[in-house]
Length: 252
Ligand code: NAD
Image 1 (spheres, protein in one colour):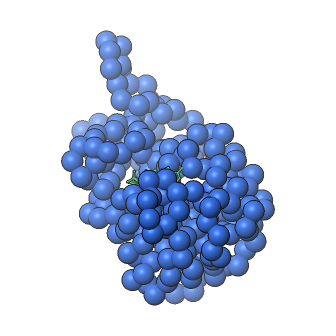
Image 2 (image 1 turned 90 degrees about the vertical axis):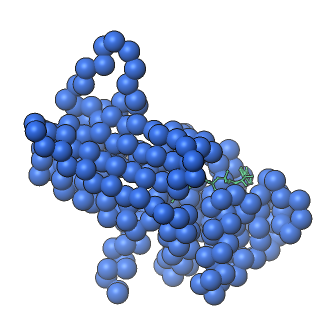
């Protein structure tokens, strides 16, 4: 694959470049707004042909990214998190004309965790309170993490959209409502990402945890997602880890 890396100087961008090369693919352009040489600052200045763009930047890069994808008909893997509802609408709209792959977490483990917590929610039912705790490095911009929101949405789906999210708690009137799911963001050090989902019942607690020890796990997932987009040859559509995993289980 010929790959353009958007956000090439970032923590994830560097990990994705390494993974792209390790898997025998080519990095045909490095794009980053901070770049000085060996690349370009904006995608609109990128004039090389590519099979796919892998993006780990910030939501502010979205308009430029979608413009490029639509103009050149190049599929994009969106790894960035922190998108607003209006951003998500733009992504859905663009996916009618170009193939896009979006996941707030590219690791296999978190996507299995998503299935496990849905099962646990159904089995444990209304008697267990659910809280999500996420821990990330001190430089992470968005909170709560895109993955915490992904896990919350999976739980809310399991409860037929009857849950509400509460971010942290502060004040004198914080008694828990049974239908809420608390989401708590811990920040510090260099942690790539830990997500704990706690099911708290009467006299028993079940906690399911995913811990990423390195960004390489997200980079590997992103390169796999890029390969998936190239293999499907879809000219449009919005794909996710769910699609990738179900196709992997069909063929492997
Ligand atoms: P980072 O700050 O280290 O890197 C971001 C890079 O993007 C920077 O080099 C910055 O200069 C560049 N950039 C920002 N806006 C740009 C723009 N408009 N045009 C060009 N370049 C631009 O951040 P990071 O830790 O690499 O994370 C990047 C994103 O990926 C975040 O949103 C993070 O939450 C997300 N992330 C997702 C996953 C996943 O599995 N989906 C995993 C880890 C991180």
